Structures are given as structure tokens and as C-alpha cells.
Image 1 (cartoon, rainbow, N blue to C red):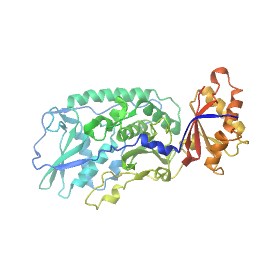
Image 2: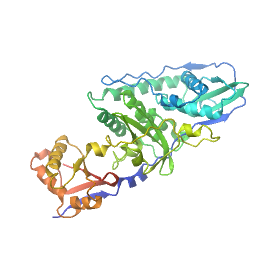
Image 3: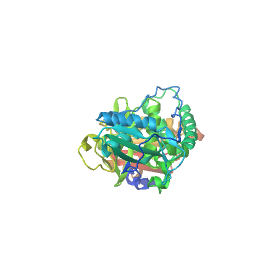
Image 4: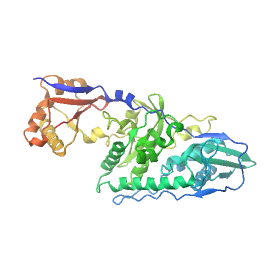
Length: 427
């Protein structure tokens, strides 16, 4: 029997070179001796983002993992005041081209720049809908008082317009979510919808290259983002439908990187939408456990480990749950599981028929751990008895002409770390 395999890709992790991320913007503070301590003036009040909740699912009313990670009253007070000041934005840009927002005043002589960094990071992580704040701030002190000045990328009037645009985009996306989806399928729907509408912003490394790409606005409205934009959008949208979602910060391919942690049926998982946004790696990072994600991601320390450090790392984590399960991993949930090539024949053929009738373009098979991966691939595609071609031929006998699976040219993606293979279906 002759078989033509159009393209076999090595273990999918090698594909990450196509979609690495080196664009995590850390908070940057600067002591500004001439900070004005008088009242703000000339600021525009903007309305908080009030996008419509999903009709079918109960949203999480707030994300507070960042707030809950703060460990002093002054840090929490700063966080709360940022929540008020962020919606008061100047109309005139400063020399850096940014717009001041309402000042934050903390009366605590022990309040340090590290406390400011923690408080600002916690607020921005908990509020992915506040997309206009820059990654820098200035501050000054007078006696027991610390004054913090944050900045917006846009003026108050422009921010008003952008908030309206953002609301409309989020509402349109949410309105399209089908009713009755279980948490795993709800997560998958949002994951696929986001990735179908967004592309990775190559060449963007800092906010100067394009600040929107670091935000939920960039990914949802513009359809263009780096890892932070993907992560903020996933966090916003999943919490919108009642699925707990936060962030993980670390490194991937030796560059700063951000992805998500997601809670499905009481278990937490890692979800890297950025690295999934690749034609040949669409679900490779969908609900991984700690061991799996650490195969090519480095997770940075928690805030608790940084309390006594004088210098903060470039990236760190505020909240990081244990991810110990693989129950909701894509390849565990979605794959046809092969324990024996002959005994599993009927199951595979029935699943192929269902996939073809649904018009699926991918069919995933996961092999029992009893099989050596390379041996299983060989028996399926490369050597006698060419099981996959037999399965397809027999499935085609039950399919009408419009749903016949082309078994002359099969493209496959090998997912060795899950002992799985993805077959690309053509009709």
C-alpha cells in the first residue's frame, strides 16, 4: 500500500519558534522631586467600562486575586485609590506624550516604591478592562505623604470614545456565545473565538512599538496583540462567563512571557492562548498542569517571596494556584483513545464518521502509554498495516459523497508530550 503524508511535524513544541513572546511590560517608577502636591485640575471624568453581562452565564462580579495578594493596609488603600483615579484623565499630554490621571496620595512614611509597584500591578491585573493606563508612574514624598502619578495613553475624551468601542466589541462577542455550554466547552469557545479574531503582533517589543497590543483592547477591538493582550482578553472574557481566570508570569523561549491560569470544575490549569495561536499548535497549551507547562515555560516567583528583596525581578506573580490535574486538558478530553489498534477500530471509525459529518478539520488520537510513540506513529501512517488509512476507508463507506475523507494526502501534527497525533481532515 502506498501512502502520501503531506506533512509530518515534529513534536509540536518545536513550533513555538514561530510565536515566541518577548513583550511583557513591567511597571516602571521614577522619583519625581517636582511632583505637584496640590489638587488636580483640568481632568475629564470617564465612565467605567460597563459591558453587558452574558445572558446565559453568571459572571464573576470582580477579579480580586491581585488585591488579595497585597499584604499591607497601605498597599490595599493605594489599590483602591487607583480604582478611582484611573477614571479621571487629563486632556493635555505631558512631554512624554502621555496624559496624567488623578493623583494617589498615601499617608504612610514606610510606603516604598516596591509597595507602589505591588499595588499598581495588582490593580492592572485585576482590571483588564482598564486598558488605557501606561506602564510608568512618577512619585514624590513630603513628610509622611507619598504622591503617585499614573498616566493614560489617551486623553479623557478619547478614552470615553474608546470605552464605548470596547463595550460594543465585548458585547458582540459575548452575545455570540451559545447557551448551555459546560465550563470546558465554554472556555474552548472563547479561546477559539479570540484566536480566530486576533493575530500575534510581530515586531512589537515595547509600548513605544504599539501600546494597544499589550491590552485587552488591542486583542478584542483591533485583533492584534502580544502575550499580555491575549492574557488580559482571556481573563476578561472568561470571568465574564463565570470561569475563574488569572495570569501566570514567567519566561518562554528565554523571553518574558504572560499566559493564564484557568479554573475548570474545581481544578486549575495553565492556558497559553498566545502560543496556541498557531496553525500547527492550536491546542498544545490548552489546560496544562504544572509539570507540562514547565517543560518549556519558566514560572517566576510569587509576591510573598519578594517582600524582603530590595530589587524586584522584571516579572513576578501575584497569585499562582497549583495546577495538578490533566482532566480538562484538550488531548485528554477531545482525543479518541487507542488502547489496541484492532480493539479500538470501531470506536475510531465511529468518531471519524461523526467528525466528517460535523465538517471537523482536525481529528485527534491519543495512544495508550503501553505504546511507544514512534512505534504507534509508524503503525498508523508509515508502515504496514497503515491503520489510519484503513480506518478512513471504512468510515468513508458510511459517509455520503459530500463528507468523504481524503485519505490520499494526510497532514499530521505529532504531539509527543501527550502521546497524541492530530490528523488534518480534508474532504
